[in-house]
Length: 296
Image (cartoon, rainbow, N blue to C red; front, side, top):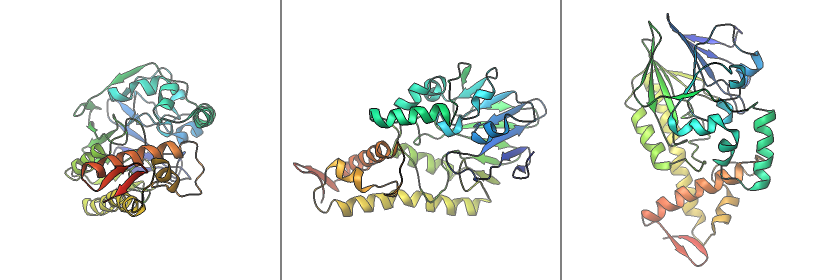
């Protein structure tokens, strides 16, 4: 394997020159005495043209394009995913619709799903549920349903190695992403609270950070990651010191930097703003006016 790969017991992180930066991502190869599982076949798997080791099963944390980009190389392998993610794994059109984009932006991203991420849909899709265990002989992989990022987003705990794959609870300075139509801010926070109770030796992410060793370091990184949610609230409340429309908030941007030119940016900003505005309204911190929204 390339030198960028790193082993953690029976788990190998398939490293990339981009360190998992989007559109790439970190994939895992988990080997046991009776089977091998590939987790989240990314662009790195595509660039390699497959893997030197035989793979028996593919487990997908959730149906986003950067986690499916190498899936086309394994047309005959079974794929397991949470039931909420099955339609998007089977159909790039369903995946695209989940972003809630306008027609022009959706057209641009549809081309990227085809040309950059090689998505064609995969029909051999089965399901797992929270707590299900994949038995690899001397190694087990336990499914943890961690919704919020998407409705069916999952992590995986590999034992006896003590490797917890967090998927897109990715601990980056970007912060939590909950910009899809199926995303939930409350569910994301519940999933974060659940992860605080899971003891592991290594905590692996899909992007940038890679692997954090030790519970103390993980909890510190999780605190920094979670703090971004509060910062978005604070930015929004400051912005709403005078009435603003939803489109004003979208243009101001809570998530992406102003110069970021991504086809899905406005859709993500809109969904994120709606989730924050609705929650702040329920808490009595924001009211609707004839001119939009206002902090009180």
